[in-house]
Length: 109
Image (cartoon, rainbow, N blue to C red; front, side):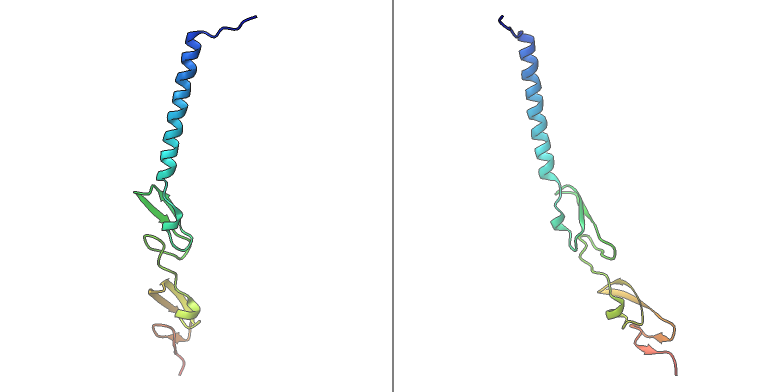
């Protein structure tokens, strides 16, 4: 028993194969355009394409590429206050009994 395949069936298969190949090219191109997390510092996540992107920073980190590190209350406020901001631009909210830019002065006399 011989099996014959119609011309129309063969044409449909070729058209489908062509579509699959075009989809593969499109997906490959899209994957090449996805931005890379390496452009974000401090384990930030890159969103967008290589051309148009931004970084979602981990808690405390700021900047276009998460390059600004958070301040450290122990180091920057002498362990006597809460540090708000980044290591290069911060404000200390001092605990009761301490004053000064870095909570370095005792308010008690």
